Length: 159
Image (spheres, rainbow, N blue to C red):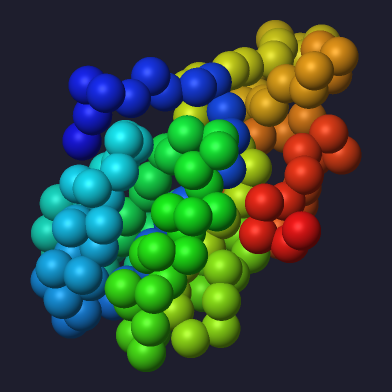
C-alpha cells in the first residue's frame, strides 16, 4: 500500500509484524488502523495461505513470519513501532531472525534495511542488495541470520 503523503526513502528502519496464518485476520484488524493513521508505505501477506508458504521457510528463510512489512519515515520509525507493539500486545508470531524485537510481548520487529533496491556489483558480476552509508560505504542489505546494525545508524528503539 502506497500512501501518497509519503515519499519513501532509499533505506531506513524497516518494521515487520509477525503472524501465523490462523492469526493473520486478527493481526490485520489490529495493525491496519495504526498504519492508515500514519504516513508510511506497507505491504501485507495476501492471504493466510501465502503466509503459510512464507512461514514454511521453504522458499526464503528470511521471509518467515513477515506478515506485514512497514516502511516508515526515519523520524517516525520508533513511534510507529511502539504503536504497532501496543496494538499487538499479547499476540505471538514466528521469530524474525534478521530483526530485533521492539518489545517482548508483541510480534513487532525492526532492522535497518533498503526500502528501494540498491545493488552493488562484485568482481564476478554478481549483484547484492546493500545499504549505503553517508560516506558511500556499502554494507549487505539483505536479511541475514541475525540482527545487524550499520555503524552509522543509531538504533531508535535503544536510546
